[in-house]
Length: 141
Image 1 (tube, rainbow, N blue to C red):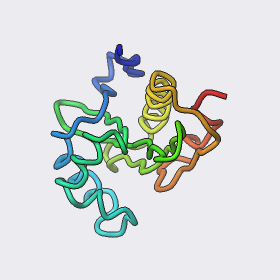
Image 2: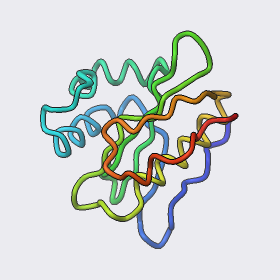
Image 3: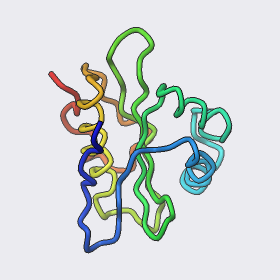
Image 4: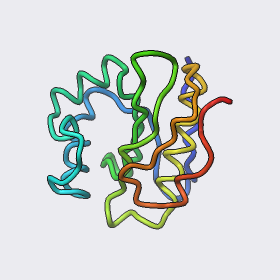
């Protein structure tokens, strides 16, 4: 399956890409930086569990990085009962906010969801740092 577009402006240095199991420790660092220990998803604080969820495609995520550092993260929480997923767990490190990164993640994951055949009305912005990211559903109608 080809990778979706990077939804980046090459000149700005940010690059969106699929989350890989090896990214789990860097995602945990991002979560701690943005939320401390307040985020309500314990798996985001356990790099081994997070890597397992990613490997099993239960959480299909994307990150945005610059200079090989993950500065934004979001994921689709894929349903066990059908081809439906919920967008959420979205976060951007403070130094990188107000640059449209959350919207890039949303658009990137919209393409990922379409490529995976995911659909449904489940569109949540739990933890979103930008209300504009909570637009219309990114999934196929």
